[in-house]
Image (cartoon, rainbow, N blue to C red; front, side, top):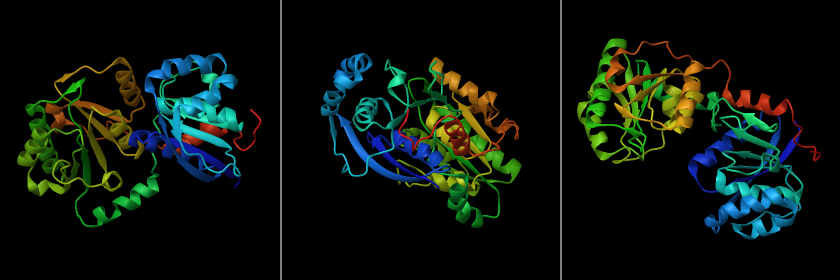
Length: 339
């Protein structure tokens, strides 16, 4: 397997970090990847519009100046990168500048926000941007393979004699407003589903979950139906991989697309739970509709959770990282420095 020297630029945002790791996971299907992680911070975010204008106008002339607007410590140049990758708007400019400096290919995951797509070798998005070098992904990349998730979930499965289902709880946002009644309905629905199907729940709240929501769930969920629980406000634990790997079915509140994507990427049937009061932005709704259209999620109101018909959402037949690798490898030789 050919070696690929890769520099990954990180802005420190966990979601962006995980998407970059997911893209690396796809590349590992075809290359022996040698990774160098590089932290980068944009010094003056208000200058983004000016940087965008200058890079679109003349990248060769302004790339060096763009570098100076970032806090970054670069590796020794005796091992130049074959490929740069980054995720998120604040890394786009330094990604372009360094690719220009080193004459290497560069990948970017995220919205271009007016940048010329030709400044990147490939642009990875969920929605098409109308460029020849755009790879439209069915899902945002995630860092763990199905085998890794299965291994993480094995101890939980071994310690319980009933099938396990996972419930991922987010919280209210500007577009999704979960009420106390919604949280109560989710807890009651979980109790009824456990009795009906003979299962136990793995349930975790998150950083966004309100204290009131945690309290309602704690009070209304019957202890007998819970195999394991993480109440983030009380005692956070990193259990996502284990919960996804152990689950036969995954349920997730609909407020977080990244949480839904992670659930779908696990290759299990996923149900998204809606509050009474929600009005997602058009792009968000379109993303959800694509997941429904592919049969990967079912959407259901919180007060109808107990009525869910199993089997209405289907698992994927092929691991997402393999699907993405096929899209990349069809048109690109990464090791060659020819464009």
